[in-house]
Image (cartoon, rainbow, N blue to C red):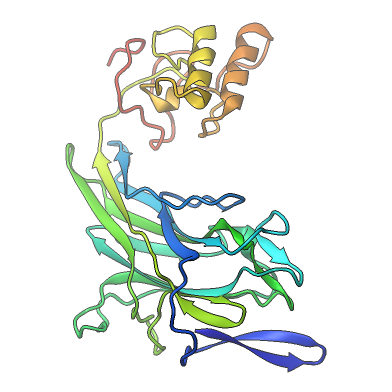
Amino acid sequence: MTLRRAATGSALVFLLVPWLGGTPSCRKDVHIIFQAEPAGSTGELFFGAASDVAIGVPPALPVARHTAAAAIVSDLGAAPGGGGLCWGSSCSGVQGWSLSIALEGDLKVVGATVQDANPRIVCGGAFIVTHLVDPDRAGPGGGPQGQGVVSSVALLCGEAVTLQPRATHTVLGITLEAPRPETGGSVSGRLLCRDGLLPPRPAQPASNRVVIGGDSFPLCTCSDLTVRFDAVPSFPFRRCDTDGNGRIEISDAVSFLSWLFLDGTEPACAPAADCDGDRRHSVTDAVYALRFLFGGGAPPPPLPFPDCGFAADPAEACTTQTGGCPA
């Protein structure tokens, strides 16, 4: 695809039109990676992604669900500033893109969104079209094309607006789902770039391309990502007992910080380390524990605290038995 400029008054409007030729060489300085979950827009490059992510599914969840993400990694020169978009005449990043992403395996793709995956790259005039493909529609080889997502975005936000030239930007969130596998079993699916997927209504086949400087380029590199759901058991735990010894004390905060910053031992029960109950692991968990122990702070949220038990949200499952909470 390419971007064609059309004058409307004193402004320039970028129109997304079908790719009819142009520069054939693929871009080695821009490529697609898949991430385990949407990560927003970062100010640094990373030229890799997990090739396999395993997600434990506790018994209380009848359906396994996870949102993976497609991201554009570009190395087009020094970025003039931070943030999701680059504004101004010095911008030389990606102006638009089209993605054609297939899903192979036993999972089902149930949703896809650009805006929710990374609102920092969405401006008021952006052109965004995202569809789940019809899996029964004939693909390039004549047989059913299978599951997938096609997404096209053009940053119609002004005369000179691009992605930051040197950054990693999440550009599409893809929600995958499957019935919970039987205990001890697993189900998996693989996301990969595949040109030629067709949306559910008459349209041109999609391809994986980026627009830079008004020209469209295919991508030299696109990673893939396997998402696997594993059926796991669920054990009782006590919130804030990070080291699992049955007591909440200063060693819990110390062991947590060692894991977070010093490559220390990972907690055997991840939900127990979420001391403030916000479903994330960050330095605030250690601060919360220390304030509770020594500063008159609030106790850890209940379910489960102060006794061993299970969290109200089945997604907060402790998959390893700890010594402090016998089964």
